Amino acid sequence: MIEVFTGGCPRCATTLGVVEAGKCASCVLVERDLARDSSVHADLVRRYRVRVVPTIVIDGRVKVEGKPDFPWVCGDEFYAWLEKAYPLR
Image 1 (tube, rainbow, N blue to C red):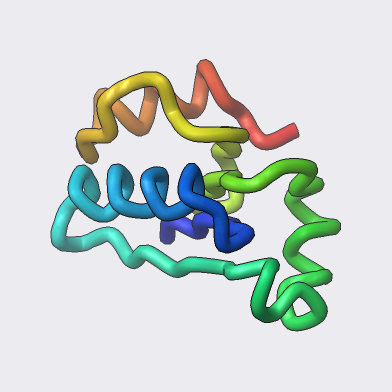
Image 2 (cartoon, rainbow, N blue to C red; image 1 turned 120 degrees about the vertical axis):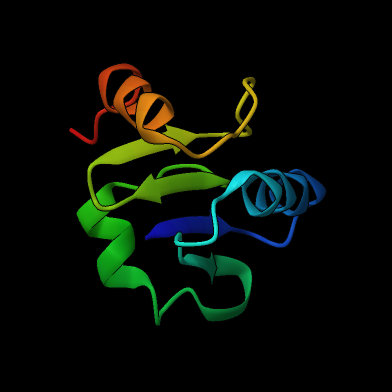
């Protein structure tokens, strides 16, 4: 599961589009719009320590803060790279 925490900004919309375009058919993409429903997502924001939008969380194991500066192309190698480069701490 790919969760994208957004805040209604243009950068968030661009990031959501990049992830949507690069995700594979088996990935589930969920937008967590904090500008619209911040209280609904408060527990996840605390659990993942979301400090900025956009923030991308994958399977509760990977966290990318801000708009990625790399191409988003789903695959095993890409996921392994993300786990090393952006582990959720």
